[in-house]
Image 1: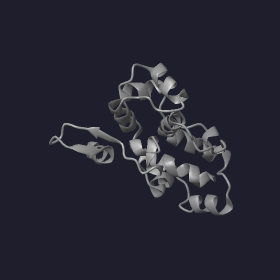
Image 2 (image 1 turned 180 degrees about the vertical axis):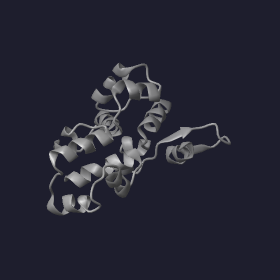
Image 3 (image 1 turned 135 degrees about the vertical axis):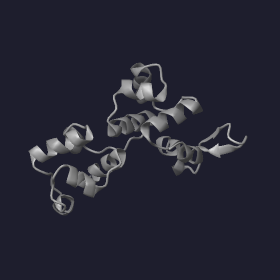
Image 4 (image 1 turned 90 degrees about the vertical axis):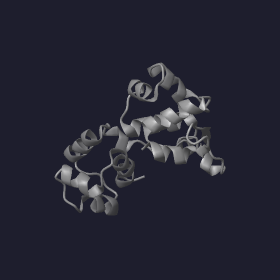
Length: 162
């Protein structure tokens, strides 16, 4: 995965366009295409500014990309991309504390109740089907919501919450 590929989820998470990002940092508008074409990194000073802009360490850009295989790994990856500590995520998602999130991140599979998953996904800005990777098996995460006494897929409910 090249530098620009690692930038994309950060841009999405922060809700800015590449053009806005480059403008905010005072970078040349061709910088991203140069980084992509030449598969290189920006100079160290620029890389530090980029890391600070997104609230990640410079190590984020150099780490070998391993696709998360468990629910816990996907939670951790989403949390890190969002720039949250375990304590911050616990507070936003209504969990007891950082140890609850640490426990989730070390689990191989998801044992959380449906409403806990909904709150976790809302705090992470993701859909449960993505976090649980059920789209690969064509399953759909459903929760009963008190909205016209219907059952909606979480995707429908999640969109309505945003």
